[in-house]
Amino acid sequence: MYPPPFGYIKVSNVGDAINALSSNEDAKILAGGQSLIPLLKLRLARPSYIIDINGIKSLSYIKIQNNEARIGALTRHHEIEVNEKLWSMCPSLPEAAAQIGDPQIRNMGTIAGSLAHGDPSADWPIVLASLNAMAVIIGSSGERTEYIDSLLVGPFMTTLRRDEIIREIIVPLNRKAAYVKLERKAGDFAVVSVAVSIKVDAAGSISDARVMALSSGSMPIRSRSAEEALIHGGSDAVDEAVNNLVKDTKFVDDIRGSVAYKRSVITIMARKAIQRALSR
Amino acid sequence: MAIKVEPNQSVKIRVKINGEWREGLVEPRKLLVHFLRDLGFTSVHIGCDTSHCGACTVLMNGVSVKSCTVLAIQADGAEIVTLEGLANGKGLHVIQEAFWEKHAAQCGYCTPGMIMQTSFLLKENPEPSEEDIRKGLSGVLCRCTGYQNIVDAVKLAATRLRELKGQH
Image 1 (cartoon, each protein chain N blue to C red):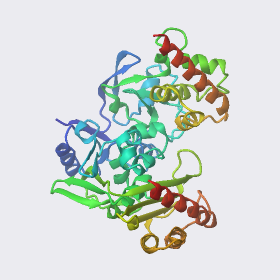
Image 2: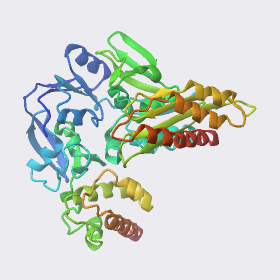
Image 3: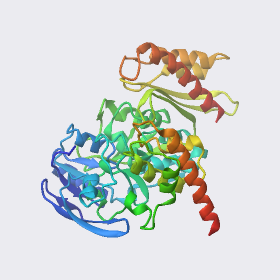
């Protein structure tokens, strides 16, 4: 399959990328290309120009300081997957990275590319939202930050304006977290997945929790009732949180499974995710 | 300085393929797999066209990529290794030998992708467990489903590569 004709602009800094976006209607940023190029081949995307940002070397880094991780937009999933500091300080990030697509996709695909693409079934939106992470976004009118929670507003729809690109992701490192995903086959999107992060106070009780659930065919949801169960619950807090999460999640029948199947397996994934987060 | 190429305009790119710089004229929409095949590197197979099967896997700047999901113009200035370049002109590479001995091919269509992905896997993880191998090769599909012999071949290749390394 051949992509439709498009122009190509290779930029070496963020300013040129923003200029190219503002001066060319329907231009698209090319980061890892692992979603965009398949869409081009299927001719579902017909951009005027592809703006290749792979030459902006300063966008590729993982910095850990002041109890937060700063991850450059162009950082590949694989670089996150093999980062030993992240495995010790925020294991749900490399845990999520290792479950994206397949190894070749992870060698090219980028964290910010996945967010900007806005696929609700992807792993980064749910995981980064569960960690209360933020995106640093830059455009012609300056820089702003946005929580990942609110970046994705619908399937393939984000708050990114035409001339904006994601520059960096900031992940606070003050939470214990885990991500558990069920795939129908290797490298697939999730049938269901659960991302959990908790804060434990000095007395050992849960002072804060963020619980996100994804069921294929629907947008990821945040289950506040599951969070409350974890924070206020007694000895059966985990059971209650799992039950509440199932109530809050929207299930639809699709190619990845029936409503009944997803409703059943998500309880197992949710329990695993909560227990794994607690054990970290 | 930004470089701009108009739609349908062709530009010259230079790519180091298996150690040799090659040039070609490409439109921005040309995929790397087509560029490589047009130059005669026909080990780079097109199996699915939807970025799933991995038969077109090559190394780009040392990491494995699906060459059907990279634009040729993105590879301008890059180093590519295809199956043709793996053995460096000296008979078969250790991984190729292991695939041969373990009969790790049925129809053989996925084999170049399997071998290139194996070379990336073993570079990153010289002593993979069976699970590491299965996960490491999950981006190349064998529709003959001959996975068991492929896993055996990767194990054999890993052992031999470690032995070779130990000798030096």
